[in-house]
Each structure stands twice: as C-alpha cells, then as structure tokens.
Image: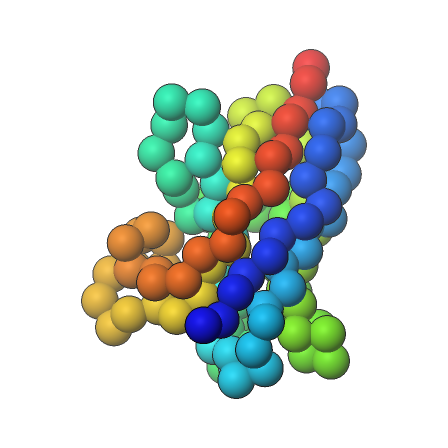
Length: 125
C-alpha cells in the first residue's frame, strides 16, 4: 500500500515562507498526478495545487497563484509546495494526495483516492 508523508509545516508570521514536502513510498507513483489540499478549522477541504509530472502540467487555485509553487523531485520521489507571502487565511492542515480517479475536477477532494496524514500550517498576523 502506497503511503504519503507530509512534512514541513509550522508557524510563521504574515509574509513568511514555508516549504512543504510529501514523500511517496512507492516509485511506481512517480508519474502520477499529485495534489495539495488544505483544510482550515470549520472549513471544507479545498484544493490548492496540482502537478502532473508526465504531462509537465501544474494548476493552482486562484488564491495561490503567484505565491505558491508545486514541484516534484523524481530522484527523491517527493512533491513540494513552496509557499511565499503567506497570509492568515492560508492557515490549515495541508494534505497531499494522489491516484486521481477519472471523474471530478482537479480540486474536488472526492476525486483523489490516496491521502497523507497532513501537516499543520499556522500563519499569524
């Protein structure tokens, strides 16, 4: 069973940066699309960024464009989310996901089948 392990969360002030990592346990998932989602307290889990390495494709939610960058290191089988200019509204638990089904849009959480346990990001004003 493939496992996803997020790390890199923490507490920063407004305007700060963090880099999240998602290590994927099986290399057979190297070319699969991956996504980052986040869930704030009392909120729905929302999609933030998607990367499809084989297609050289990335996509971001509007609130992340220009501030977040998703990337993948094939040698380490790890996906990253570089987050700059962080805002308090970015606070939440960040999850990575893979194994997207054929239905649903990129940012629909139910479209993704495999999830990590999440890492907490807190941005204070």
